[in-house]
Image 1: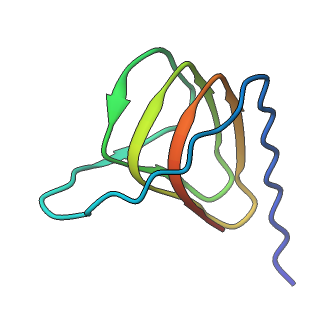
Image 2 (image 1 turned 90 degrees about the vertical axis):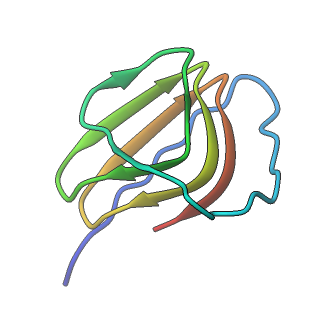
Amino acid sequence: MRSLLLTITVTAAALLVPVSAASAEDTRCTGTLGPVVVDNLIVPSGGTCSLVGTQVRGNVRVEPEARLDANRATIAEISA
């Protein structure tokens, strides 16, 4: 059985905004992203990603056994 750990720490209100995925680029995260804007975000299997003031305009996909920490981040949609 696969285990998935998804931890989201939000110190400010998260804003959920529907966004079109047309011509969006994927960003793979295995470390820390600061105050930048990305289209789609992927946390690969076994990886850990920390978002600090990051804005994700598209989808966030957290793969099996991956971890996502978000602090002051704006995220449109999360799937795990």
